[in-house]
View: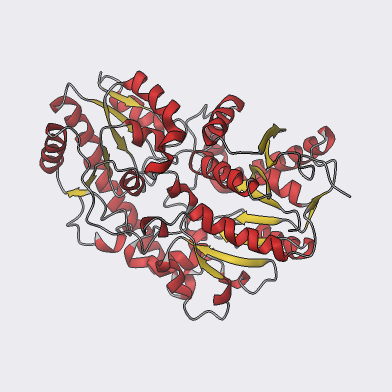
Length: 485
């Protein structure tokens, strides 16, 4: 097998870092190395690469900006094999499901020689492209993040779960999903021009006119706003009606934590915590309360009871803007009385697990039997590596101080211009002084070392350098700047 290096760029560390480490560990056990880093770091490394494998999506959500198109051309030039896997690849509005799938899977690149595989979470997304002439490139793999929620991987959260229980005691987890109305400063606003442009980039104008796109944006925002207006007071009422229970409220990564801190700061049994990944919180909790949130699926895989609070379930436009899969998972309640009743029932019976009647396997293969997404993807990458004609290479010097300084300065300038264009001057100022109330998040070296220690792979080396993570088989010398002749 020709030695291969897999490049993995991280878009949202809270959501993506752990499963990428998991994937890298499994690949290294098969003799395949990985480099994990921010989008700008991986882009800089890729510029000095040849014949590598890229696992993930392109830089933007739709993959259709000029920057993305240049990336694909660069991949073709450098012999990169793109295994396209989108980190937001399966859960969209029911009434616009096909449109949203086409929005994030850039079909115009399927013909590129760089695209070796297009990896779908489930059959539902692949069926959107059933008539494509590039079907031989399609694979249904599931999403590796969901693998880690399965009981056999509970060991990886032992330390974190113990820490959370010590900090919060016995608690019920409540997860927010209201970024549209409680948005952080470093993410596009739900009604802003960038959100409109994203839909246009994704091809919305092929099936809708400008008026229809705008109506859809405002209608979906209306539904989320109504849900939010019911969700916040419901949390307060739960805290008052269940004084002996602790509640840990976890905002969505794109939600402002400060809103919840302000709203619930005077409650002794409500704690706001947006740190790290949500999975340890699910495992440490007694039960989960959410409102059409992906955490409902993760809790189901973790054998944790969920209550799905949906106050707009009877709204006239509810069905169209329900999120496929997460709108149906768990025990569904439509008002506070139902929420209180179900929490009382679950707690009275010792927080037993209530398996959902909803089957999400069509949306994510992870819910079908014992299939592990990580193994399916590793098999595909290993098979490709066996057939490769050339070894992956990174030109030496990409991690030198001068090169790091060069691309950091260039990326900083580009980022400033991007923020000014995206948010305007006032919101840009808020991003700079956000002090943590942002979507962006960074794991410390200590946190990453702890995460890695829980994976405990055999004969695998783990190295952090210049903000980039290197994972490779022991005694391997073709990563971390050392290139074989």
